[in-house]
Image (cartoon, rainbow, N blue to C red; front, side):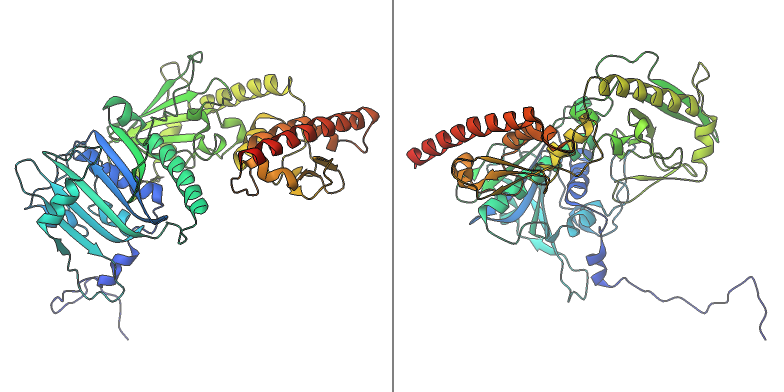
Length: 504
């Protein structure tokens, strides 16, 4: 019977290259927003100050996506290293890239074809293309002709690519709608561009502001040309109005000779400002904001410092790191978050401000501010029946954030056929405010409707009528109000339909 020994005997080595199909598994933690943020990192590392993201539409379908920048470009002698999976160049102390897989992993997570065309000042254009192919047997990368690379770089981009610049092209993008239905494509573009603006504006808010980097998004129709661009504005999670008394405070600690600084902020109160609401909502964005070289890696969550709490949604903490700090933080390859290490909680517990405030005192102050603000807010606002189906999700979220909710069934606002003289019907049994669908086309102006259509009209009706769904029965005053609403709204709907029919 063998016994344990410390040494393991070997008799040589063998090379085991990765299966080429491993390319298919790269970047699986990316979303479209985080993948494009990784490509923006590359542009910023190349000293670009103008970056354009462009969706390409052909015959109503979305067929491709470009990222164009006016950075320093790639020289012919370094293009292969840039396109090598896991290729590591010499990163400078301020570079946002680090692992050597960002461009490839981000692209392969979203598209079956990645083409990079670039021109460095004083050098000819150069291009390479990777294709994802399940039958791939090697790591051969296509060499794009210099003529095509030049033609792509010299298109009429709104970003100058002369004397230097880079064009990244994605084809066969998996996130794009498979349909050519105009309404669905428009809805996808509207939603996606809004999400992109929010994510990129938050991720790069310091860089946009401090380095004057301009990021924009547009859509090019292959027949009609490019449309109006949407600008990505800086979304600073610490840009609150005024200066809360005594805050922010810097809590400092030492970890093996390296200073750790937690800049603790308390928003002065609940706000409708986009920099407070942020993508995902303010409650989800409480906690730690970790930056590396001014690039936001981690936006919210307490990483073991404290449990998430609705009363802590005014608390946000800035932390700047240069790189992974052993035992403190580890950054994931997608640069979408950091993970706290075993030494983090203890370091935070030791941190103190100049006046002696520790993390517990900070969290107590943040909770006290929220409680005071919430008491002042709810005192002047009555509770409402929760909003339900038919109202736009953004409106539902806004109502739930701004108005206290009764513990009742939600009120829906939906369409059905009603008599000509009746525009609305209060259905307390079904907890639904019905609208007469015979007037729907006129109110939509011929546009295609959906479950959450006409958000302004439905929101006004909700605010007007939700109290009629409260209580055990309708009183005489409620019945009089409903009769008045019926008369006025039906007259308005008829006028709208007459105008619509005349336009047709």
